[in-house]
Amino acid sequence: MSTQKNLTGHAAGDAPDANSLKIKINGTDGRFVTKVANSFAGEHLVELSVWITGTYRMTIEYPGVDQVATTEFKVVAGEVSGTASKVVCPSSFVILSSFKCTVYVKDSAGNPPATNISTAALSQTLLVNGATLTHGKSAYVSGGKFNVNFFLNTTGFAVIKTYYGGNLIGQDQPIEILPGPVVSSVLQCPGDR
Image (cartoon, rainbow, N blue to C red; front, side):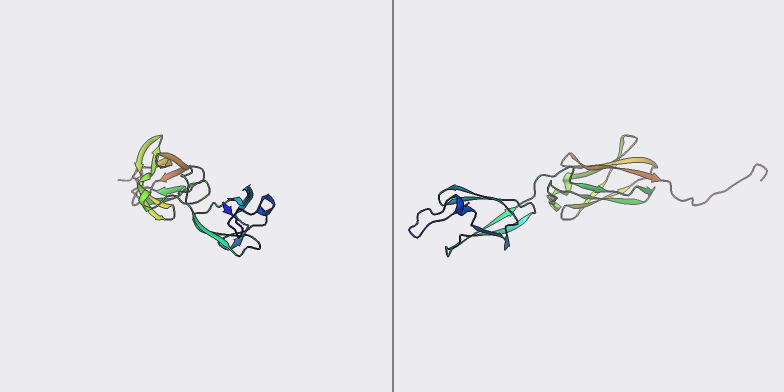
């Protein structure tokens, strides 16, 4: 909200004056301003549209008045979004080897609300034929990004489900667990002995 006063300290400015305010966010004109409305004489309501997390500095100038109002505000990430979050896993891997999935935890605006402190809230479960076979080991990387490591000793088709705070996020990841290479073999024919 912006308030203009004249030299005597009384409210100045009305609805037409709202459009003449010069509003800057981090030095940029108008980019984040969605609406400026007159509340009543001398007071204007400024609506902003800022989705990216961070600290911002807003300056408001009223033409012809040698004063600038300045304030700082902070935008923080919202709740984790199951649809905006993303899970990336390999489509297959070889048995008895480890593999990792990368999980990007995001809010609805794409900001990373998860931190190192919230690593325990992330869990990935690998299901083979609908039964839970194992849980991955989560490690925080940075800015809402996690790596989840798996090591399996079974083959077949599986699905990886990812949860954050008990809520399903991202899309289920299908994965094929392949048998390893043949280490040694002995072939015998019926007549050989």
